[in-house]
Length: 355
Ligand SMILES: *Cc1c(COP(=O)(O)O)cnc(C)c1O
Image 1 (spheres, helix red, strand yellow):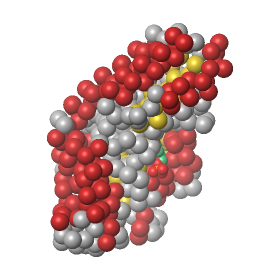
Image 2: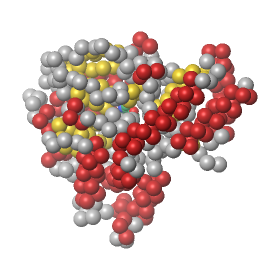
Image 3: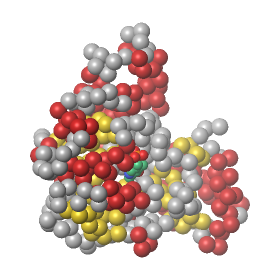
Image 4: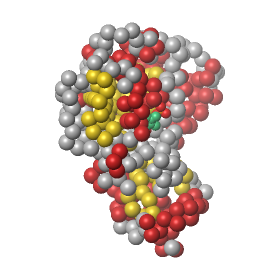
């Protein structure tokens, strides 16, 4: 049976990305060696990194003065790398979920870290508005898409201080005005590549301003100056990321991706809104296009396991909500075809008819 992959992360990748990665593992560029057994400094690997960086810049229209680097450690390591490199006196954070909270917690170890607003009062089902960003902060940190709760900041905010964004789960889902950001970072395993790769888009002029000693590996400048080759980078996921970037370009770039993502999200949200038994959990105006969260209405709650089983029997994978939220979550990343959304809606409707 065809599987519809709604996993939240690691998650669906374009089939051709997986096939090209598999091919490179067997025989990298018909060279008689596997991608897994060559040096990261091999003559034919350097172009992979160079092309991936160039496509990052092209697809996101990254202006001069920014560097793109590939790292390990996940988005979680960035939670401490950001304050390590940027926090001298004070940093500001917007708390929109568990990942945002974890980022704030790390910053507290480096100086004053203030929460400008939080949506914890409603289990992070909305994005706080009308907050004031302190103008004396070294930076303001946001999480653009809250993977667990299905909320998303869909416009590029104006900030009087450098804006730092964890964009792990919505990078490349829409065009972004990079000039409004100081750093955009994320784990690659949601919308870009297999697990093991972290990307960071860093405004060079922000660096070198803190007085503390920064360990070499945690200093952005190390990786910028060495073209992500200071030490061995995650070779295989970088190769896969390059294939995804090519796929994005061949499929119309980020404007086309955004249109498809809007179409998929609207389709599913409309089905949820018109359902008698399901209801969405995120506030309508803050709904994510990447992670669509819904639950059974109170009077149908006892059907939760039954729907989970029914959906699984119809080929749905990964629709169980995060353990801290419950209910259901359909992740609709770039690579998810609209046919999978239609199949999920069919399953929801059929289940509703039967119950
Ligand atoms: C998944 C996720 C993380 C954690 O990423 P790791 O690479 O596992 O550290 C952080 N932030 C957001 C928004 C995420 O979706």
